[in-house]
Image (cartoon, rainbow, N blue to C red; front, side, top):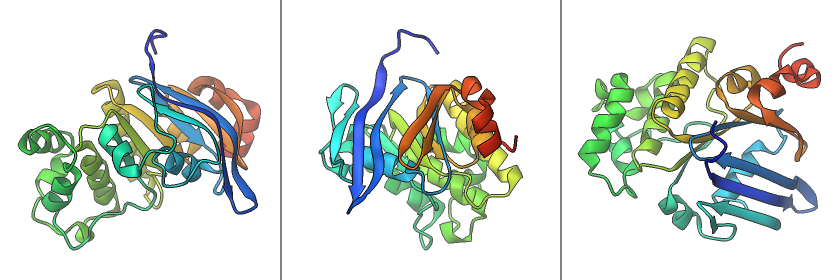
Length: 240
């Protein structure tokens, strides 16, 4: 990753409370332009809270979130999405009774590019979706639904793609396919990606840098190779 690239997302000293429980404790994190950053940790570590705070789904109690140099900490979720962030939440939340094409068209709501141009692009990246444009989203396989969720997010021409647990519930072969797609979107197409993931091995395999989140605290950060080689990470998340 070139050192002169600017930070597209910068989080400083972010804390979030749910009642008396501190979900995030003075978190600082950055994503540079064209970078793939992975946040790994166990269930309940605060990974989802972190991503949701970026979109102002969860209110920050303290700290600053900047996107493209602008303070978005307390902006509305709608305006943040319009500024160029697409979020794929845990659990692949599609509209199951709508067709593949209709789901994709909804994703283009904020796009300034012609919808036909975006459709051609996502069908190049996801040929299987091009074969299923009239099929109801709810009838797709788990892997196909995750592909549709990613494709729908790309329809808005985002500057930053955020994903929460994209491998959840997928068989290993489908997990590998999804991560291969994300790797290609990053390395070949230049998309900036922020990913939260329990599958640390896969996440660090494709990421440029990684953060380890434990009970709301960043306990380790660095290049993906450095994080992966850390003995504590290997024991806790990589099976030794």
